[in-house]
Length: 573
Image (tube, rainbow, N blue to C red; front, side, top):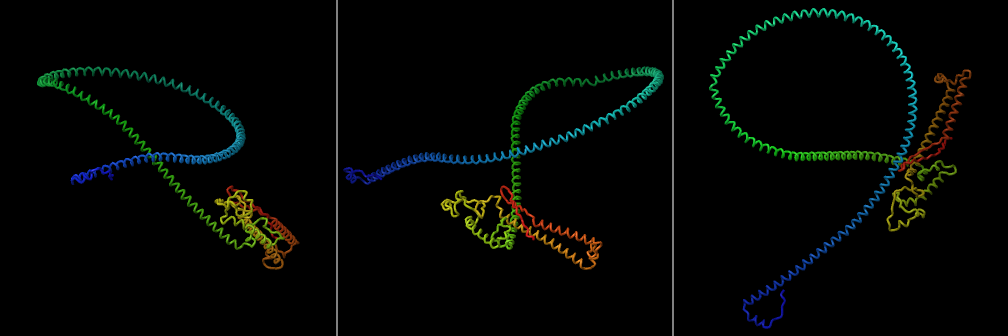
């Protein structure tokens, strides 16, 4: 807006005296001055805002750089800490791996020493066997050499005999052959002389006949040559007369040939130039062809390389897919096998629980109160009755209830320092504090509350199992003893009935107790009864003093065995 200035003296008079047009012009000028002042103010404000914006951008850029540097430092420190932790983990893994490798190397060293000992033992035994074989071979070789010498002597004698016979036969045959050759040579000389005379006679005859034929043929050929010369002369004259026109034509053609030769020469020079140009272009084409052939060869090589790379990638991808498919199949098979195994284990566990429920019905009062059997309590003494054993078991179960309550429903205990185990049972101070307690899945002994080793987890189970097994064994022994006793009583009763009764079975029996011959049968029966009574007494003594050793194997990380040996006293009277 336009600020009002001081009023000029006489301005009111001037405004009063101005016309409408001047007033209008004056108002327009004032409006233009106000617009100009407002535009300048807006321009100044825009410039100030632009400067503030640039300054703010510089500050923002500088602060961004500072923030990035600070954040980079923080990230670098975090990365360094992470790398240090990874290095520690890797170093621990490396140490464990080195220890494992050292153990493997020691084991292999022991195996190597054992193998070397076995090898040395085998070598010694092998050398002994080889020495025995060598002695046997030397003896066999000496026997063979003696046999060979005897055979050689016999062969030499036979050879000399045959050689003498052959030499004599050869001498006789050679003499006969010499006589035959001399006779044949005489016959051949006579035949050769006769044949030579016949040959000379035939040769003279043929020579005379050939000379006569030669003279006759010479006379005939001379006559034929004269006739041919005459005919050649007549033919030559006729040829000259007939070829005069052709001779003139030949001359004309010779001139035309000279002209054609000049033209041909010019054409040849032109043809040479064209051939040179053609050779030049051919050379250029060959050069370009070689260049492009090199380029094409390089492109083909690159194409082949790419094709091989593609084939290799495809084969690797196919192999990877096949491996993954195989792994998936193995995983599916393994999962199916694991599920089948778990189903089997679940069925076994259900069967065990059912059998446990069925066995629970047949438990005695003592087993219900004191479920885990102790070998010291297997056979109670005569002084302690069933009531005292039940009362003691109830007292022990009541004493164990506080520790069982502290363990919780899951059988877990809070991990506390060693000093806290010496304090009285009750809520510890560490559990009452604000810190969160730590739990672990160790097993605890119900009687003392102490930790149980992993290989002792199944002690209670094996106690009950051993007790049941011992009861079953004692029952089986008692049953077998009663069966034997029943059989003996039946045998005695049958012998008694056979001795007092007369029937077909008794009479047909070869050992008839009613038949006495010289008192031998009664003596035999008495000896047999004595032997049977001694055997029964011996079996009863063996059953009375028999001991049973029952071994149970528990599950543990170390794979150690549980061994429980209990001396069983038979109640057989």
